[in-house]
Amino acid sequence: MMATNDNLPEGTDTVIDEAANDAEKGTVTKAKERIKSEAGQLKDQASGKAREYATQGKDKATGTLKDVSAAMDDAAKSVDQRLGENYGEYARWAAGAVSGFADKLDGKEVDDLLHDAEQFVRKSPVMAIGVAAVAGFAIARLVKSGMDGAQDDA
Image: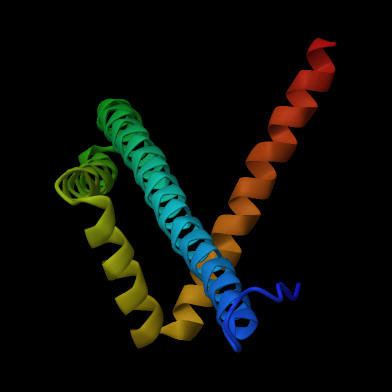
């Protein structure tokens, strides 16, 4: 948009046009800065929510592992009576291992767990793929059994 006015000194049109362009560039720059700022805030909010959900999941997993450990310990008494104390000792050892893992899990922050997982994958990528495959299979079986149970209830 070229401003023309015969009463203005020569070259003024160019100065006005440059000023208009600078104003538009300034507005664009401010808009870019605002978008970056808001994107950063959204990223921080999403990260906070993800961390919150991960912490809740960790707490639930820890509680479940402690319950499993207690059930295994109770089962060890039954195994003692039916099969002998040697077999019951295996069950108690397994219960202690699960309980120890639950305590370690409970004592770590989510960031520490992520770092440990990253280090494990770097050191043993084949093992990590195997663990992921087994976990995926187990989750698929749990989901399938839940869906089968829901269909039986219907």
